[in-house]
Image (cartoon, rainbow, N blue to C red):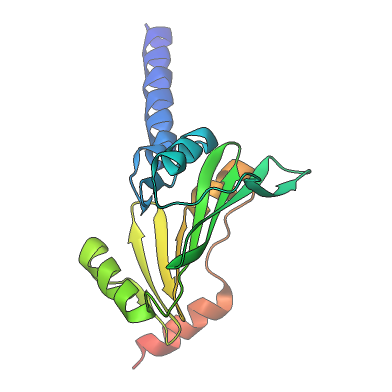
Length: 178
């Protein structure tokens, strides 16, 4: 009887773990139908089907021979001359959009992101940050937007996620005293 209970618990935890790990890949956070968590082939298909995204013949910018990591580059000229997509183990973990600020400026970007994702979670003079599930969205000056599933990337790559550094905790403690 205990064996059945333990087996049932193991199966339950396996499915919970599988669903949690797959949560990154169920999200629709990204740009022009290219979303964090998509496979490389899904991204290429989506980009090829979008008439305004330019996909160069030489799609790969760089291969990392030590890791299973690839970077692709696309563009939408003249508004978004640089779109960088970083994959690890065939999954999109980071998407960086560099806008031409003559066409789309920082304030237009942050207004659009606030309309879509609500109030920002962090703010500095140089950037604003939002969080959607496990994806961090960051708008940076002069006109850059980054989508990043850092926690999942670090876990998939086998890096240990460190807690906030001591200096940051100390600063927060001092500021909490205000």
